[in-house]
Image 1 (tube, rainbow, N blue to C red):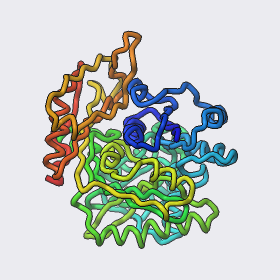
Image 2 (image 1 turned 30 degrees about the horizontal axis):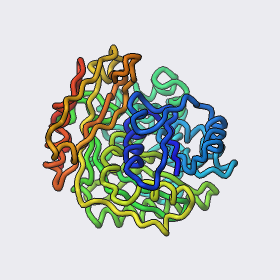
Image 3 (image 1 turned 135 degrees about the vertical axis):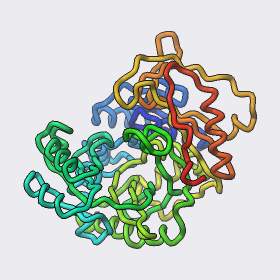
Length: 422
């Protein structure tokens, strides 16, 4: 089959890498892709949803996979489904689970899915009143999409009130912050759990843990993610059972009962507090960089997982994972996350170790191809070095061995990814 992948990051590159190894896949297209996805398939300079659907029809593309959240919220799935084209992802209505934090929190409350106590409001007075009832730290969230940056964990009541005021005035996140959610801070440990859904049935992928902060020991500013590992030993069968029964099943039933069955990736941000999974948030696509670690653990053909989910046939899918671990280390540009950095040529040393060649790879993200044919670091998060092994330690060692082979001016990365598990 021919497959189209929408997006341009490391997440989309890693999905492409999994599909490239799949004997069911003939050709992969990326729209728009990045400077390295042209090694896996063909990049398209098409962004209009109807024009993409025209391309799919004209080129016998049997499956489209949507990577990022923005096209989902903007309704790409609805455009394709009107034309009977198989596409992996939720409708615009269902994508509100990520597109609006207020919609998501109210949905969780309606369907008794465990979540932190909260208020949703566009009134500064009501926000202040609720903040006064909570103990610090306090979480303040902009309602709309903010590229993963619309959440402030305020360390005091004054800081929470300031964050609420800046969001509601439009100063912090523009229109995305003109309604907000204020909620209690949950003290536990965080997990990323992904369920592939077809509207009724679902498959839960190995749980991952993401490292959001820029610096070692989870210090420094929040980023889009500096690395991740999967599966995490911080989850067990009991937590998986509770997530299935209390979270995923009520969510799928609730979405169906409200007339917007959920298809695609349900990305569940979980805080485990005293053994109980509490839901922090939903996203409607793979996490990045978690996707880069989950894809190499997939043993069965990637096309099977995505196509059967997109066509409502997951119950007939046989999805298997390797009994291994993956660790991914994000390499970022010099000034990330503060400002953009001048382009820098990327040089990857020749790798002579069979062990490394067979058990580690790079997923490229913020890269461009120069007129000279060379690859340049042009984005904040440039690439992810992924190592796979029989233990987290082995996977981590391989990931960092690969990091040592990659060179560009101003490269930065953490040196402790997966430290919680180790």
